[in-house]
Amino acid sequence: MPALVFSRIDLCKNCWRQNPNENVVLLTLGLLFDWKPDKQMQRLFYIGLAGGAGTLIRFWLSEWTARRFGETFPTGTLVVNLVGCFLAGLLFYLMFDRYLINPMVRTVVLIGLLGGFTTFSSFGLQTFTLLRDGELGLALFNIGISNAGGLLMVWVGYSLAKIL
Image 1 (cartoon, rainbow, N blue to C red):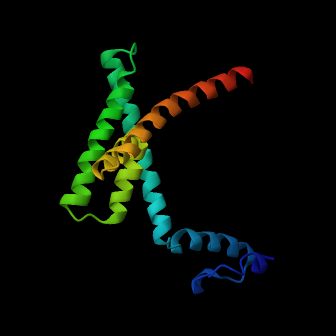
Image 2: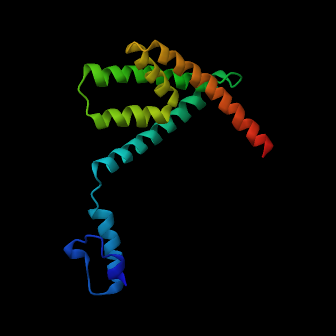
């Protein structure tokens, strides 16, 4: 039975033993320690790791700001969005225009870390890029549809939840 289940897995020579009970344990250990992820899997792993870090930083900064300035106005969210947009612009220039940075590092930082920190930074950066490229109409459309559409979808979600 184990030979049928594991026939498609390339085992290292030292992982296979005569005792069938050992086969499963050794196969599992071999998969855990001999597995070499490809570049796409590594990139996804690092993006996820950076996204988790960005989320924790967002939570900490938002909570700290709310404690410091109160929660009457969503100051924490505002600060996170503005800091995220500032960092997006700063890092975009540094990574694309000033220094030659590995594309994987750029992706992990801009999509993972800042994406976890705030998606508003992506919106700000993409709108800025449209403006920089002379696409004023598309930039204005992006601003309008993102804000109006976002508010509309909040209302739709809220209204749907009330019905259900």
